[in-house]
Image 1 (cartoon, rainbow, N blue to C red):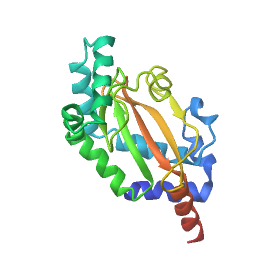
Image 2 (cartoon, one colour):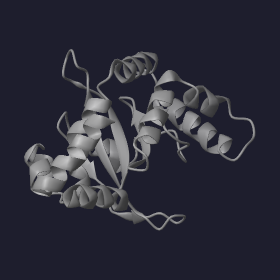
Image 3 (cartoon, rainbow, N blue to C red):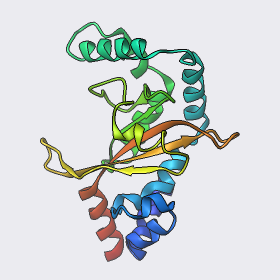
Image 4 (tube, rainbow, N blue to C red):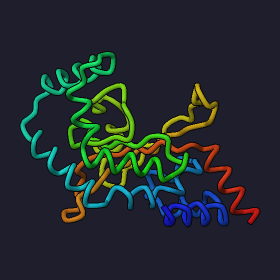
Length: 205
């Protein structure tokens, strides 16, 4: 995560304007310190483990219909309240989910959640259990994958009920490195208080 720390350091020295200068026009209107981390977020999810997993699921779901999507999402929601969790176990036990768990752990509190969807909005991998399996009816998919390769969506700041920390989700489209076409979407939730703490520490240092 040394590259991530470098991005935090750079953001602390030149402020949010530095991060925003690197973003597509669609994202510039959103004023969030978390956007300074977007280039590093993209780099993390351009790794082969991510691209291979997304491509494979897109192939498996090439002919999936909405009725099947709804059925899977309903099954997922039921499993979150049950001791029998075959669909959840399959996804959470994948190498890609393990990679996302590692991203969250190695960030040491900076990222509170990371998950990625395929081209129909179904989860491909995640760092922790989500309430639903299908994100296709939410802004995190509709305002990224459906918009285009440079699309970025910034959620409202929310307060974590357990820690009281401010958290904000940054959603963005994931591109196939070979074709440069959208293949999925990602959501990375940033702990804004932790980001501010690190920024202040770097500035003081």
